Image (cartoon, rainbow, N blue to C red):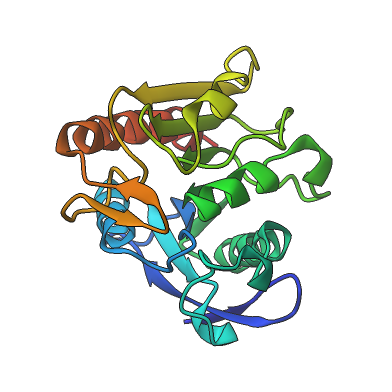
Length: 225
């Protein structure tokens, strides 16, 4: 399906909904710098089976991009944040979505979009997102958030270091989970590998724990009006 970014560009995404009429809580999903990954699809299916409408946004396809990992200047976090808010607008227009119970979740570059979209300085007049989940984001530029935020990151991440996120632990809106020896992209199935000089690899134990913790987090903030 297609919707308008708040930049007025046409963006695409995959919409999934649970069985029934709703209204259901919903989650906007923002992929990383390499585009939509199998792990993102797995999360979408998991959340939909748990009772959430999901909209997995594709920021790249409509713009003719396949990745921005080699040049982040091709599409910045601020532009993708407008995509996320466009997805929020679209979900709120659907009769089977509870408009006050929409969260955002993202990975890596998309995790940084989550931080930007829930940053106190970017809070829109319509209230914005109810909550946010960021997996292995780059945390350095953000400090205050208007919505509850859950950050999950690997302790061995050499691309978006956990240390940058640990400074947020004292923030009243922030929960942080660091997975010991887990690398970047720990929830994306695949063999250990290096990409642009960074270690990537799947950690099944961390992923299973993250699935449970994220469901519990969304259950706290999205299940009541």
